[in-house]
Image (cartoon, one colour):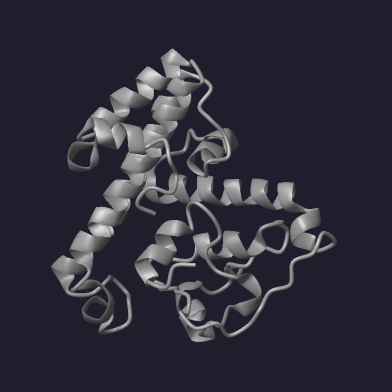
Length: 234
C-alpha cells in the first residue's frame, strides 16, 4: 500500500489502495465538500462501496497509508471479499470509469478497458488498444497537471496548508517520473504480451502508442525486453 498521498491517489485507479476496515478520516473534511442536501460520498448500493467513495472524493482531499503495521486483516474463503470478488471488482471498474469520465473526459471506456489497465485482460482489437492508450495518456496528463498546479500555487487547490512543502516540493521530479514510467511500463507490457500471443494487429498498435510516449516511451531494445516482466523496476 502506498504511503505518499499522491501515489495513494494514483494507485487508486488500478486497485483499491486503502484497506477499508482500517480507514480513519476527518468528518469535517468531508462535510466541507458536500453541498447541503447532497448525498454523502459513500454509496451503500455498490459492492465496492469503499473504492467508489475514495474515487468520488474531490482531488483536494488527501489520503495516504501509514508505514506502520497497526492491524491485521483476516482472509478466508468465506469472507465477503472472497465470496463477492467478481462483483466487487466489477463495481471498482465502474468507479474508475466514472472517475476517468469526470476528470479526464474519457467517457467511452468499458469495463473491459479498465480490466486491461488493471492487468486483468489483454486488448482484443487495435481499436481497444488505442482507446486504452488514450485513457493512459489522459490519466498521465491529469496527474502531471496536478503536480504542476501545486507547484505554481505553492499548494494544492483546497489542500491543507503545508501540503506542498511537506509532501511534494522535494519529491515532485521523482513523482513525475514515476507517473510517466508507470504508463510506459504498462504500454510495454501490453505490447509484449500481444506480440507474444501472435496478435500482430493489437501488438503493432500498442507499439505505435508506446513509441509516441515521449520521454517515458521506448528508449532501447533492453526496455522492450524488460517490459515483458511485471517485476522490472517495480
